[in-house]
Image (cartoon, rainbow over the protein chains, first blue to last red):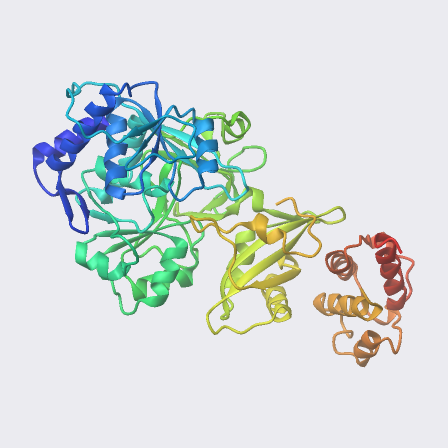
Length: 471
Length: 93
């Protein structure tokens, strides 16, 4: 069943809401009516299969409906986020081959692309059977290189089916739909008949809003989860599924989320290219810091440098395959050749599978540090430093050395009220990691992060006085 | 980079490498202060400690020292002089 057919099916069932926001409640019929109206208007304006449309709509509900309408008419789309500078939007549009920019309100004056106001005039409806489009999603790179991942409506449906918890649930993500992960998970949620709950305007209290809107799944980036759990007390969202994206979620953070937000914690591992790969649910959080069992429909292996599978417990490169995976990057032949080869998708992560099948992520393969032939995982250093009572977050990275290969160093962010000196932290790391310890640690007020909360190691490397790093 | 700072880097590296005797020795503070030199054969400086010395010098002083550079070295003061010389070359002095 195609994406639009799923939505029509939910209308026929006639239960629940499709979209909820402050002062807005759309039934499935309401929402599909808006989608069909928008799709008809887009088709009348010549938007259809083969056309790539940029979406510059900040209003989340409007953006979501536009997104569904573009899928419906068979166009491809990419978010040109309103929070990005115009020049960046233009660069992304050029890479994606955008021919029109869909917007609400007045068109941005600096743009060189034809602008298309979100159509509201009635137009002839599209037939039910109509080719469906797809979305181009930007991956939030940490190395300075952004990839564009094309996913067809059919691939989105397959990926959606690996998130069955959205079926009948009410999903809230504090991050705007203009961000890749939010757009993808909101499309999953709709494909499964779940209710998408959108943010209120301006600043808001996440916990109070979740309670007010009857949210059943709160989906957070790791940084958001840490912040929220630090402020909350006593299972503030008891019974709500807390879903945290992030390959490395420390055990103590999981404990804090369980104690302060909800015991229904799910730590998810996945990517834009693959969708959800695994998750660790309630009862699966322990010192192993795993991301749980791989979901049905995905084959995942851990292999060595010669691409041979390794025994249980041994760390190696992750490779995986399954239906609904992206097959290439839009304009990145080199990255495509590296990440999609031999029939597998290689996410660039190091991992291990326990005897019971649980997957643990040990950091990025690119982040592995080779000090005089000793392989050191950045996640190992970060885990050790984050176990220090004064440390809130740590980022380890290599500095290139002509003599030693790479020298491990780290930057940390202290907890509020936490006290430690760099020398103390170096000694602490040495005590816990011996040869694998970072040889220098700097303390920063705040680790540099991108807008998805990922730590920017390249920026950190610049802070070291002898920066020979290529990381 | 002053000579005193170079001495501190070398002292820290030996403490970091947990070189027996050096960490607790009275010579440590005298060495850092430049009041005395220390013969390497007074301590058990193994290959790992040598590696740590090289890493510390590279990381903190920005000059490369390979373990082979230290095979003919007799005292910590000689290492200070070696590192100081390379720092000066790097600085164009």
